[in-house]
Each structure stands twice: as C-alpha cells, then as structure tokens.
Length: 501
Image (cartoon, rainbow, N blue to C red; front, side, top):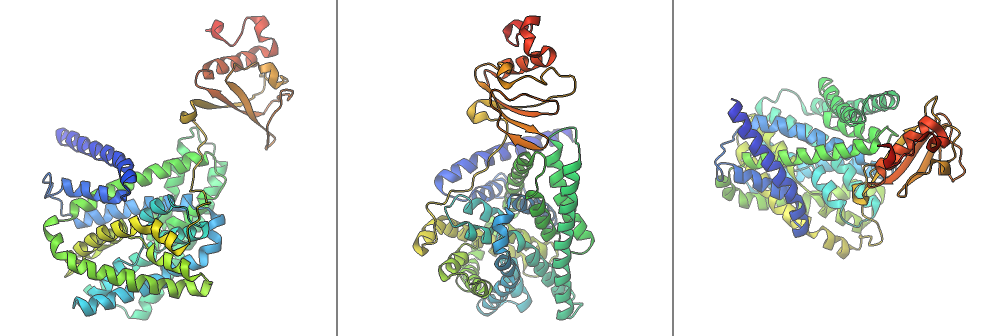
C-alpha cells in the first residue's frame, strides 16, 4: 500500500510541476493552458501510459470540488466597484441567456442530429455556461474596457448555478419525469434566490469574524477565507439551494472587505484555483477516450456552430439590449463566451447517471471545447481590434502583494512598540537604521502617515520598515538595541551592528 502511495505521489508531483511549467510555455505560444492540461491527461490515459480511468461519478464529484475553488477565487478577486454597474446585464446573461442558449442549441441538435428532444436540450444545457477559469485567465491579459471585462467575468461566475440546475433537472426528468414544468421552474427560482441569500449571509458573517479574530498565524486567514466559501457551498447544498451561486456571492463579499492579510488571502486563493484547474483538466483528459473522439468530430462541429453563430448571439441580444449595451460590445460578448472545463464537468452528470446517449454527449462536448477554445481564445484580441472595443491605453490587471518583496531583493518589517519599550520617545532619525533600511509608514490610533526624521514614536505605534536583503539583519538588531536601551544604546555597548553578534 505504501509503495503504491509513493508512486501516486511521484506521478502527481511530476504532473503538477510539468503543468506549472506548461503555463509559461502556453503563454509564449499563445495557447490556452487548459489544452495543455487536457493533453497531459490524455497522455496519461489508456492511449498513452495506459492508465485506465472510467469513473464518471468520481470525476463529477472531484470536478464540482474544483469548480467550487475556481468560482471562489473569481468572487474573491472581483471588485465590487466594477461589478455593480454591470450586475444587471451579467445576471440576465447568466439566467435568461442560459435558457435561450440551451433552447437554441437543443433545437438545432434535435433537428440536425436527430436526437431525442430531452437529450438535445441536455446538449444545450451542458454548453450554456461559460467557463470561469477560461474567462478569468484570458480576459485579464487583454486590454479591454473594464466594463466589458467585468460583464464577462461576472456572467461566468454566476451562470454555472442555473446551468448545473438545468443539467441535473433534465437528467432527472429523462429518467423519471416526476413533476410538472411549473413546479420545476419554481424550484429553480428558489434555489437561485436562496443560494444568493446564503452566500451573502456567510460572506457578511465571515467578514465580521475575520475582522475581529486574533488568529495566532497570518497563514490561518487565507485558510479561513477559503473555508468560508466552501461553507457557503455546503450550506446552500444542505438547504437545497444553489451552492455555486452561494460560493460566488460569498467570495465577492469577502473579497471586497478590508480583511487582515487580504493580499495573502487572494494569493492563496489564486494558487488553489490554479491547482484545481490543473487537477480538473488532467482528470477530464484521463476520462476521455481518444478512440471514440473521431466519431464525435462532426457532431461537435455542428453543435459548436449552432452555439457560436446562433445561440450565444441570440442570448446576448435578448439579455444585453434592455441595458443599452452597444452593438459592437454585444458582438464581442457573443464571441467571448468561452467554454472550458465547466461544460465537460457538466457532461459527467448524465454520464454518471447512466443516461442513454450520455457517452456520446461527453465526447462531443470534449471535442467541441478543444476546437473552439483554440479558435476563440486565439482570436479574441484581433476580434476586439476589429470591433474597435479594445482599449490600448487601459492597463492590464495587476496585483500588488505586500511581502516579501523578492523581485526588489527587499523585506517588509512590521514593528509594534509595546509598553516598556525604549523606542517610545525616540525620533525616527535617532533610530540610525543602516543604509538600505527606512521607516515608510507609521500607524497611530488607526491613522497611517509617512513619518519625517523628526517624528517622535509613541507606545502603540505600528511601523512598516522596508529593508534591502543585505540590510535586514542589521536593521532588526538596531531596532532591538534601541528598544532595550533607547537612543543611548551605543553608550551601553549596544550598537545594533556586527559588534553585537
């Protein structure tokens, strides 16, 4: 048993490291990284290294777990100031747009591929959701108007909830058909409303708790924040509400709060989301059977053309026109409805339920995602320029982290002056910090300010000190010396330099 575990860990570590390196390679080549991860999964599978993996139920469960983390990261990094103006159009795209897209694709597949109408609608429902991971990763590298980016990101964060409800509903109805349509409609409305409410309550409660918690380690705050988003999903699921919507709403509330160690929380969530994407795409590649994919090529092209040329444009027109979105913006929204792992995960729902035709559905969706990710992902920038919706002067999304400052070869030191410290009463210039270290900020009574050399320090002050890597140790020794002996530390043979070692 231990030997098998060692091998699993070895393979898993190699896969993760190769996937991390593939991100840089895919960026240089202009290819979406998800295709590289899918390829790794296929290479490990039955046609590559020979790993025989056919467990659709396990894939569905792990896929949903990965989506929770990915959607949580999207909510945590969404800025409410950008989200609020587009909330109406994004929510409409995520609900009315999903319904319209499902109906159009279902009708096209029903007429062209001669499928059962419920299975045809299932094709539409599976493909109705844009992929949050693909949208976040692609759009944040482009120079686009913030409003347009926010619309697409908010839509991708919210439309998983109604889409998965449709998929589960159609899978269940195909098997037993227990309730009339109006009852199912009321259930969907309840699940979305309750999911949003639960996510908001968890987010507000978590925000209050994290602000007042005095956790013993800074590393516990990111764990708690991500744990709260998972709690939102679980609470929604227990209440028979939309867990995915609860996750996104809770993430937005937490991500826009002034939380302790906020940048550490966002960095931790970003790393978890990358790990979830890697594991999810590799797992989906493992589940795919290359021997069957050739037969799915033509149905995938037909379904994809119906989605891109008919369903998505109609969904955008119906959803965006009432909000006075311009035609060029609507055209870009139509083309930028990226699909990724989400439709493939949703395709495992009927597959795990043993639904007739579900295997072909999975293969068609897999092939469609690969083809249209290559086509759409590579053409977003040219299409934006062609439609003149690009914004060359707009800065691409950046993230500022607090510490450590590796690229600057510097460290950020934080110091609170306690009772009894001789630092109280000392002027900043009397600290005599070594060259390469400087006091950059003082927080006093909840108010931050940049000190000047004559600023006198007080008990309770919090100081931020930036020091180069070479000066860090000397600066720390000097601060400790002054804390013990005050400004006259040198008279007591405490120099705060190499002589104190």
